[in-house]
Length: 160
Image 1 (cartoon, rainbow, N blue to C red):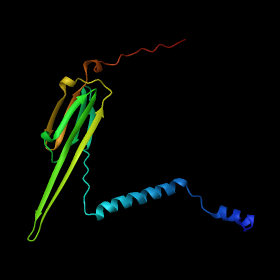
Image 2 (tube, helix red, strand yellow):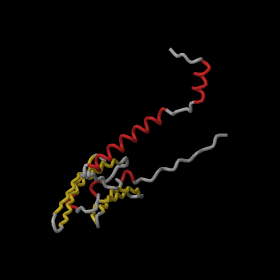
Image 3 (tube, helix red, strand yellow):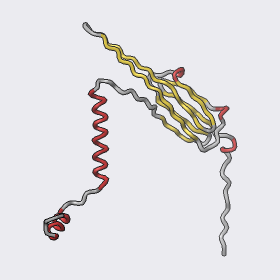
Image 4 (cartoon, one colour):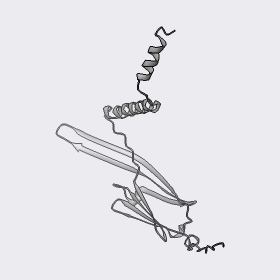
């Protein structure tokens, strides 16, 4: 039971600034992320994650996909196309060795990656080309002949 007069309670509620309920959720999420990230840093272990960046460009005759895969070769990447989905997967292996007078330190990081790119346009899978140049995988996916048909122009008639 509240012993304060009703008038004081209303004045306190009116003077209290409005708090958005999402602010507390945002603060809690920020706190959790800071805790998670700081634990990774303080343990001395580096979490290896690798997700290659890619660019997709549509042209009149097809699509061009460029995938950044630094430190990898064409043998480290598996490229497939099935049911109008381009699949790129592979594994990145990295080793770093440092030798000093009284120590030897070897660090290794491994990480597999997988990207799936669906296409809504029908593509000619028999003519897909891919080449690997200086850590960048270039892929050209030509559109199927049925997708290359020009749009039919429809004449609009005015009603009187």
